[in-house]
Length: 76
Image (cartoon, rainbow, N blue to C red; front, side, top):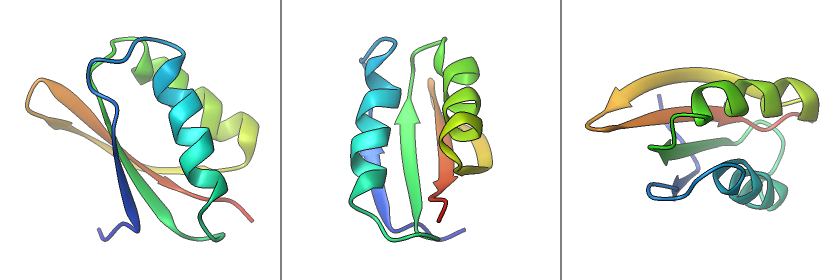
């Protein structure tokens, strides 16, 4: 899948990955996709919760080395 922007949140702990994703998504147009890479173990719970609460779609998650990649489509 293609994405519009990428955010490297490796090394950041909760709640920073989600806060940085919120800020980055704010600059995108509805329908754009943000790829966020995070290695915080809490992100596996925090990111889906953030997407559900903020009206974004968590398109996919996949392992990327020691981290996880989250593809988030901005809601409209």
